[in-house]
Image 1 (cartoon, rainbow, N blue to C red):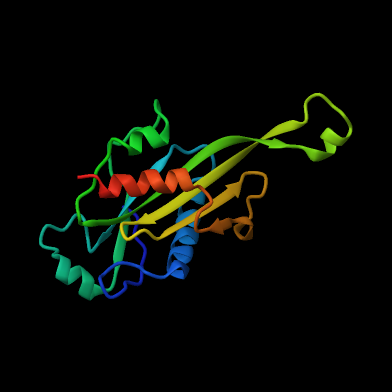
Image 2 (cartoon, rainbow, N blue to C red):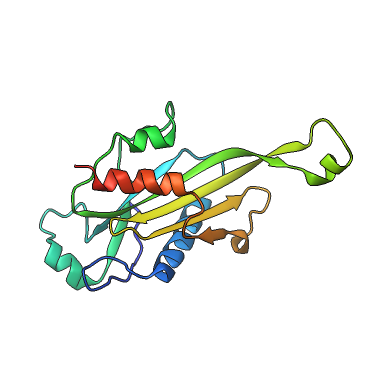
Amino acid sequence: MWSCDLTLGENGLMTDASHLHDVIRELDDHIANSGWDQPTALFAIVSGDPDSPEQTDAASVQSNKQLLFEPQGIDFSDQAIIDVLRTLGWDEAVSGLAIAAERIISVENEDAKDLEQDAYSTTQEIRVLAIVMRTGETMNAIRYRSHDEPDDLLTGENLVPELNQALLMSLTTD
C-alpha cells in the first residue's frame, strides 16, 4: 500500500484544487520510481487505514489524513480503461480515485508537414494520471517519456475529460 498525506475540508474531503495538484505530483513521483512500461494502476482514496477494521469515519476525519491504496485484482490488460471503469462501483468509504496509465499517442510534426512529406505524424509515449474526488474535483497530469524530468509534468483540472468522467461515474454507481 502506498499512502500520502492529504488535507481534508470541512466534510472530510479535499476541496481545494491546489491540494489535488500536490497529490498528483506526489503520485507521479511514486509511479516514476518504477520507471516506464508499467501496467495501469488504479488507486482508491480513503480516509484512515483501509486495512484496519477498527478505523471509523469519525476517527479518520479527526486524523486529518487520507490514504491512497492500490486495489488488488483489477485487470486492465485486455480491455480499454474506460470499459473497465464502467464495471466498477465503490462504497462511500472511497472518497476518490486516482489512475496512472501509459499510452502511445500520435503527434503531428508540423515541420515535416511544411516540407510536404507524406508521413508527418510521429508517436509519443505518455503517462496520464487522473484524480477524481466524489465531490467532483479533478486533477490530471501528463508526462511525455521524451520529457521525463520532474519539472516536465503538465497538469490541469480537465486534461482528460473522458477519463475523469469514467472515474466519477464509477464513484457514483452503487
